[in-house]
Image (cartoon, rainbow, N blue to C red):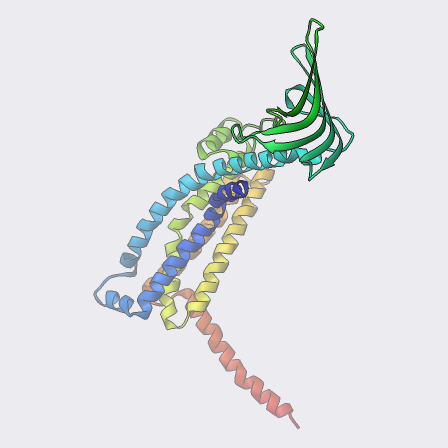
Length: 346
C-alpha cells in the first residue's frame, strides 16, 4: 500500500500541470461572473474603472502562477517522473520469490543457488530445500525439510527460515564441518536489484537548464522540443485572463454556458496542438520553436481579440455576440419550418 501511495505522489506534478490552466481559467471566469451577477461590474464601470484596470490583479496573479509553473515544469515534473520509474522498477523486482519454480535452481544474491521440491503460499513456503553457496573459496551446502521466507524487522530485508536442516561447509584448506540444526536463518536472502539507469537518458527527465545545455551543445531535437513545450506551458497563464475575464463578464446576460464551452474547447485544442507541435519537432519535420510557438501565438491572438472586443462593449464579448447572432438566425428559421409543415399537412 505504501508503494502505491508513493507512486501516486510522483504522478501529482504531472496532473497538476494539466489541471492548473483549467483551474485558473475557471477561477477567473467564476469571479467575473459573480461580479456581474451582483452588479459589482456595473458599479465599477460606472465609477470610471476600465476593463483593463479590473483585469490588472488577474495578470499579477498570472505572473505568480508562471513563476510556479517554471519550477513545476522545469524541475519538479522531470524529477518526479524519474523517481516514479525508479520506484516502479523497485516494485517490479521485489516480487522475485513468486517466480520460484519447483525443482529448478535459481541464482540469488551473495553467491546463493536455491532449489525446492515444492513451493507453496505463493512462493513463501518451501518443502525440501537445497542451497549451495560459493564465496571467497568457501563452499557451503545446506539442506532442510522446510523453509519459509519472512521479512527481517531489523534490516527490512528478506531472510529464509529453515527447519530440520543440515549444513556442510568446506574451507579452502579442505577441512569439512557438518552442522545439524532445528531452526536456522539465512540472513540477507534478498535478491540484489540491478541499479536503475541514471536520470536524463530521456528528454522528459531533464530539467530546463539541462534541456537548454543539450539543445545548444548537441542540437538534440528531442531536447529542443521538450524545452519549448515546457516553456510555452509555463507562460500560458499570462494569456488566460485575456480569455476568461471577457467570457465571465458576458455571462451576466445569460451567456454562461457558451462561455464555458468555448473556453474548454479552446484550452483542449491548445493542449492537443502543443502536443502535435512537439511531436513534429521531435521527428525533425519542423523547427521546435516554430512547431510549438505557432499554436501558442494563435491562441494569444484569439484571446487578445476577445479581450479587445470586450473593451468596446463591457459585459459583452465576440463569443456572446456570435452566439446571439446564431440564436436569432435559428429563431427566424423556426416559423418558416412550422409554416412549411402546415402547408404540407392534408
